[in-house]
Image (cartoon, rainbow, N blue to C red; front, side):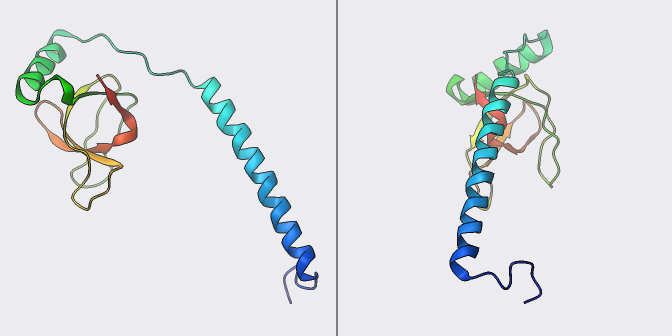
Length: 124
């Protein structure tokens, strides 16, 4: 009864909720379209000699089909998370974390091993 819409008839209240959700959905859709057109797609970064040696090592250990490139900088925030730079190459060890979460992958970064967000990796 203390809410601003507390005395509104139920059908009117649900119509207002529905209208608000439709408006929010339209705004979110417009934002997503704008974001996709403004944000440039990741570009393959040239490898320096040290990174190239690391890639060759990862290929020999894990095979070429397991290599992924980091699409944007990653700051590890949890235990066992890696901090990686955009353009780095990693090898996929497992496509989930220890709890079965498929949005965090276990990778070998050519030395350190840890978890990274799957959405920030693309096949190399």
